[in-house]
Image (cartoon, rainbow, N blue to C red; front, side, top):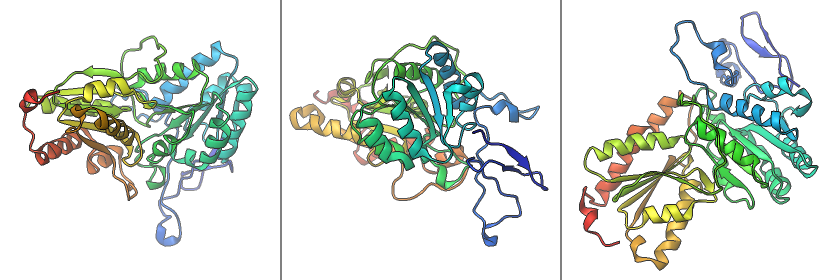
Length: 386
């Protein structure tokens, strides 16, 4: 079922479908009057429809790129089926529905059912894609574990709005899914550094036969030239630049902010390496350890809660290496992500990233603070034995 919207007397769009995720309150509704704050969940998969005439160009967002690629895959593979839970427009699957109406299912606000249904379809030979917002996927954790992953079925879990989402409010920040998923056997977890890599990773998801979680943000892409998407070997990270003193390892589009921070650090004489991890599970153990060996500082970056997620996986890897190789015993690790122990408040994504210091300037500042704490100076690492 597809959500329908009707304007009220004040011109505010309200959902006319009980299964719709969209909820918008009038300006007169306030917490004092017993109402919840506004949670706007408009169609982010088609931003051009809301562009004002003089607005600057905005690159298509990750959702739009994901859905366009999914439709191309579905044209070639009749087994591809799309499923969502009351969010067909926000996830972009309404576009899949328009082209393949018999291969799309909206189960309403029932994420648990979406995952179990996908498992059954996969067992029957279909290739289901379940597209959910990261924050709502939390509701189906049990079904991801006991249905999808325990049966090791090739369900593609499209984790939309992974990371900060801004104006949709505190409840919509996609910050807890990654640490939860890291614990689950058989589940492959990936996130792209840009929109073209998103296309490649989606192709990769359909090239293999295990549960596959693909995390991507609400953000616009980088407006990169279109390239032919190629399957990426599972667990193969990408070395973007080598360095002898500091190693930055990013998971997801935060890699670009890490790159900007690396440029600023290099201007002060630091030799900085940069890895696009691509995979939180499995990690590229060989590349990460090769590049971390003998470094003064290793920094992991993710737009997810900093406990138990991607950075924790790298920490576990380094701790294993320290026990057997002296070259790792003086390597300091800093995990940069969304701070744990409190929720992220309402605000624009840019403001929130600045406030919790996961924008480029905040990343640079956090790296410099650690370097100062350990009394590291540029060039000193060249004399350290590796």
